[in-house]
Image (cartoon, rainbow, N blue to C red; front, side, top):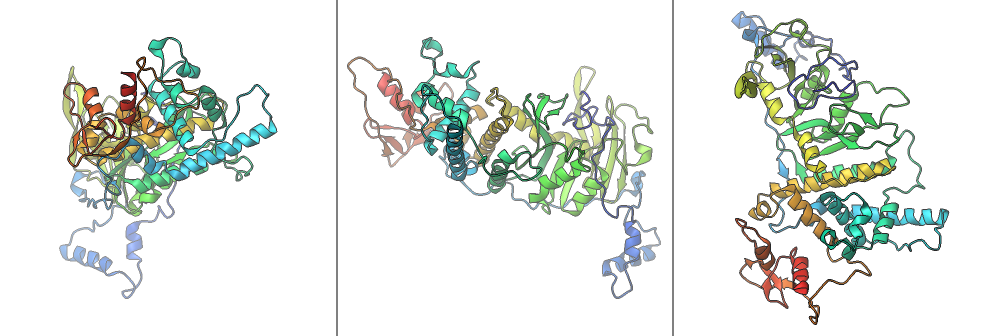
Length: 567
């Protein structure tokens, strides 16, 4: 993997994660130079000193052995390693409450993108349109603006999801009426001029409200804070989480635009994220008063983990963040952390640094200091890993390619766990990258807005799959299936004011269709039965079309109407 520079990380790649970088982001703990054993021995007189300290010294005197309660320095002799007690995670992972079995994709999306978000989008967009059209009156020939409604905003976002799924080179091509083979149904939902105006006036923050001093992300502050609070209220990690960077593509002018050469997206806006289900996010806005923030990685980790401190959550991170000071601080605050570490970090065992030890491929060495465990393993390059909850004597295995075959290779347990769990944010980026709306805009905040929209959709998909209902497993086997149903649910019954008529057979009038609960016993949905492929099992429902007397899901009503009117 290529070198990222001082502000980049090596991701979850197990090879070459320990390149010595120029900048060191670690923060120092107050009092780190004081020996814990000295503090225990100076605990006061017999009346004030804690009883557990007296018990430790009493047991040491009886046995005649040297006191081994703490390690004032790194211990490299495996015979002196202390057993490590790993506390159980206190989080009840998964969705915070049970949801109805036949809940729609729009329902799960609405758990996080709630009515408050829709009201904010609608209100601020209408306010921004009024401000702009008052300050800069449009010419008489310009399209007429009508205030956006909540249903219209939902349809607009639904069409944006659809554009991410069905990609065309120009936005206006979604509304073309020629070349019937490549036409879409966008004109039925919203007129092109209406969509263009909603796109132009889309807004999240009143421009008349001054931004706080030094706040570079004022336009998005409420949006990001609201989303992260909803993420945390609807889902809890399952004992493991990942801290990593996520890149949002943007190549325009921006003071805090980043360049990360090893990332798939090299130029853009950096987002710090916690876990595959994005439980917490934070946008990097660059230097403060022209100065690089000292202890940046330490501060970012503490901010992201603030909602889960004291829960014994196991967190995995790469070498941008890991340091002796950070892991010690997290252990005190009830967070179990593990990650690769750069060889130039302070406080590492000097004798086991890559420059001071020579290992053959597959060999490893370990060290321990209090709750910290350190290991260096030689692959094609030295791999250095550190943890505050692993037993350094415990071993595991990883798959590596040796002589044209993949074989299990013994490694320290902490390295096996790191490779297994350090991929949550990368999988999130991969999932949403396939269907993110790609558009050109000079407004950087739009990129972050659509990124937040896609992350919300992915989180909703994770919550839906976590329910374990057979209906969800069969209905949404992939994230794409979920997005297609979500776009349909958001559009709903919204139609263009002058939408083109649906084609129908000559002399056949349009028929109305009403969905209601008709059957006491669930029956197979007609549309699911007609559209299912070989091997798929059509879903049953209690609802049906009153006029046609056929069983029908709520989400299948639109397809049923189109099928009835066309043929």
